[in-house]
Length: 243
Image (cartoon, rainbow, N blue to C red; front, side, top):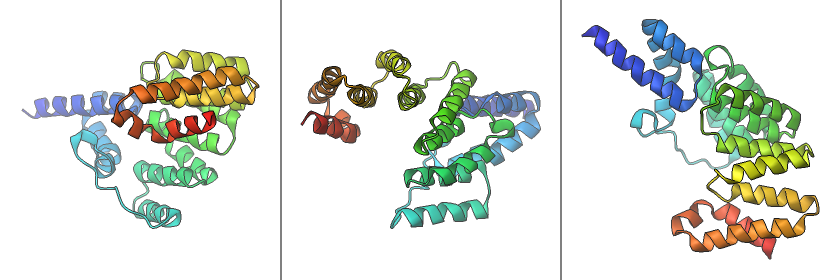
């Protein structure tokens, strides 16, 4: 009976690690050192995520109203001081990026990307977002290349969009165009077309940029209220550009 419980937990935790992109180091530890692996994964990953996100189907309780940016950052700083876990550092780093302090977020991600977390999908993506916001585009490309190589079978549309934007920021126009065109076939929202249009406009391709913006507008008019509400900000920016 005990053996069966361990096998079931191994399957659950390994599936969770794959789904969340936590890397093969955790999966191998869970499978080949089950007692230690399960205990470490539960304490360091599963329980912190259950407290903050709807992991394992359990609704998180971390949605809190904040008066302002500083109060949000202070809250997550206090959480890190209470328990310096990867989950708490990630929450703090995300808040710092949201509130235009990416340079402070970068070391938090870098500290977390060690041991079993060294190729964690979400941590690598968070670090890429932070370096992009800090305008360190060469570093962003390096991080995203590592991420894509480490997770060849994952659905990485947002990561590929950031990669295309990074190429544009590095003035690699042809490579960026190719990246956006490849992304167009799989990206569901208007964001890829919008960022592609903005890059084209910046390079003097006004007509092509206008066509993409018109496509965003047309798709929005033909789509559901949910689609328009979900992508409201991007659709609004596209319409503003069209005048």
